[in-house]
Image (tube, rainbow, N blue to C red; front, side, top):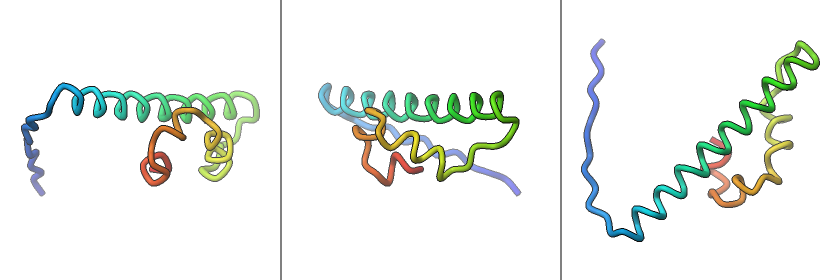
Length: 74
């Protein structure tokens, strides 16, 4: 099975680029925060942190509130 990558060139204004970068930065920060929670929980308890438990830890995060709920839950 072969995979293809599609390149899409966006022509955005300066404000649109800034907004898109801010969304990407918030998404990255939320992912890093979730990963940190999983690692710390494992080091403390030697058990995996479930998705639901991690969600409850992250739902009050400032990064979660910036993103749409469907984007943040992904």
